[in-house]
Image (cartoon, rainbow, N blue to C red; front, side):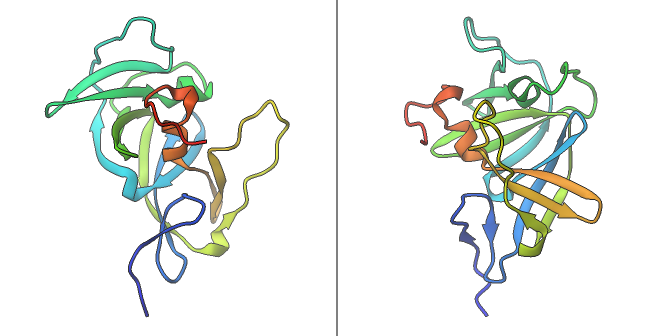
Length: 168
């Protein structure tokens, strides 16, 4: 049986031949989200960032990460899920998306999960006012429900303005 990872057709996560998906779970307010573990470079505590003039409110600024200038996006602000509070649990997930390194601020990281195909449901349909293009489904494990994100599609979207090559 071939267990080499392959790219999921939906861009959600790495899957094995058995259809298992490996995700990093994190919290924003009371909701739990999941992203492809292979997009994660590292997880760091939240530190001060250098602000950039005229940047959108959800772009907190930049950090120098071992010589690489990394933009930092606060997903709580981007998704409008409450007032951000920075405490000992607040972390930055450093991602490799496209050919770019980007950091996202989240309330906390829960764990790494492996989901079976039976534990993944399609993304619900919402009115046209809600953009669900970056939401690829819902993961269910027991009583837990995770909003599954295509983090690369989100970070490289034209709206984020983090790259000159947005994904459509």
